[in-house]
Length: 143
Image 1 (cartoon, rainbow, N blue to C red):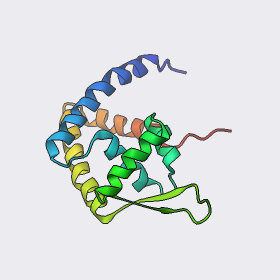
Image 2: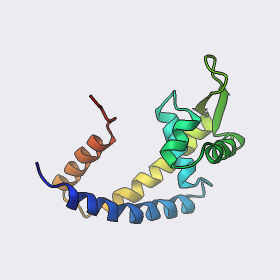
Image 3: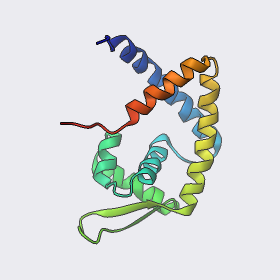
């Protein structure tokens, strides 16, 4: 098996720069969204059954901090929240139509910015990167 540590090191070096670029692009978009808000909306959009605790874990923040972020998205009309019929301690979250429109517009802008950053790569490198990211984004399966 190949040693993945050099790739891991390069990946760790790339993350802060890419996040900075995305944060700047998001700020320039005029969307009013932060990276955390964008990530939260994307997670809720991808999963119909994501909980506040799941969101907090994924963002590395406390449930009260995530609750405050979700409250802001709710007040902005980007998220809906309603009681879970099976568990009254849990809220069901969904992205509103306005939230979906904002995610689409901002997502298109971020993809364009990332595509420009990736443009120096050769077609074979882009294909390899896409395959690798698809693999990394797949849910972990444990035996």
